[in-house]
Image (cartoon, rainbow, N blue to C red; front, side, top):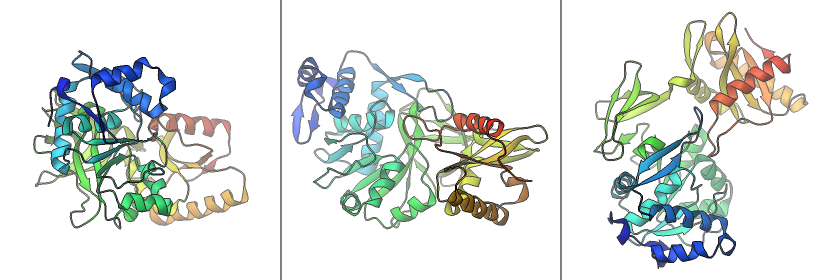
Amino acid sequence: MIFNRQQQRLLLEGKEYTFEDISQFIAGGAEAHSPAMWDLYLFLNEWFNDSPVITVHTSGSTGTPKELVVRKDQMMQSACLTCEFLDLKKGESALLCMNLRYIGAMMVVVRSLVAGLNLIVRPASGHPLAEIKEPLRFAAMVPLQVYNTLQLPEEKERLEQTDILIIGGGAIDETLEAEIKHLPTAVYSTYGMTETLSHIALRRLNGVSASEHYYPFPSVKLSLSAENTLVIDAPLVCDETLQTNDIARIYPDGSFMILGRKDNVINSGGVKIQAEEIEKLLRPFIPVPFVITSVPDPRLGQAVTLLLEDQPDTEETGNRLQYIENKLQEILEPYYRPKHILTTDYIPQTGNGKINRIECRNLAKQLLTTFLPSHPHT
C-alpha cells in the first residue's frame, strides 16, 4: 500500500500517469476529454495538491445536503481497510462508474492509488457495464445500476465475469437480493456514510457466506445509544465517535443489523412505526416505485401514508390501487396500514439516487391538500 501521495501513480486502463501528467491534461482544457475523465482529472488535481484535506458532499437523503472537509490520510486508511478485506492486489482492475461528487466514487479512485489498482473509467450511468469488454476484478455500484445491469443478458454476463462487487448508496430490496444470490460474483452490501469515508462494514449477499448481518472491520467498535441507534468508533477514519440515526441490533459476534432510521419513525396515535419495515413487507406486492411516509393528522399526530409512483385516473392505476388496498388489509395490522394512498409521477430522490424522505413528506402533504380526494383508509 502506498500512503505517500507524492509517490502514488494513477494506473489508468493499463497506462501509468503522474501528477504532472494530470496537470497537463487539465491545462489542455475540458474539451479534449470525456466528461467522466475530466471529473477524474479534477479530483486528482485536488488529491495531489498540498492540502491535507478535501471537500466531499453528503447525499441529502435524510436532510439538507452539506459539505464536509475530510482528511486525505484517513481516506487512505479507509482504502487500505477495504483492499485488505477484499484482497485487492496491484494491477487488478477496478471500475469507476459513479459520480465523483460523492464519497463512494472518490474512494474507488483512492483505493486505486493506494493499492495500485488498474482504474477503468465509465460515465456515471444506469448501465455501467454497457461498454466493458474485459473481465473486472472489482466494481462498486449503487442498487439501481445493479438492477439495470441484471435486466440485459449481455450486461448481466459481464457482471458475472466480475470477481467482486460492492453495492452502496441505498437499500437493496428483496427482489434484487434474490437475483444477486444466483451470481457467481462475490457481492457485498456496504454500511457506512460520508462521515465514515465510505463503508465501515460489509454484508455478503450470496455464496456460502451470505448473511443478513453486517460485519465491521476489526478496527471498528460499535455500541447502541439509549435510543438503540448505532454508535460508531472508527479511529482510523473518523476522529470523533459518530452518533448515527440508524436504529440497529448488535449481536454477540459483533455483527449487526440495521432496522431503519430514527428520522423515519412515524408516531401515529402513540404507536411508533418504522417506515422501512413497512416498505419491506409491501415491496413484494407493489409493482411500482413507492415510499412509506407521513402527513400531519389532527387525531393521530402523524398518519401513515403510501406514496406511489403511478399515473392517476387511469383504469390500470385504479385496478392496481384496489389490489394494493386488498394487500394492505391482508398483511398489515390496523395500526400499520396507510391512512392515505397518494399517487405521483415521481418519487423524490437525492442526487445519487436515494429516496429523499423530507421531500416525500412535503410532497405527500401537498398532494393531500391539493388533489383531494385521495384514497383514505381507517
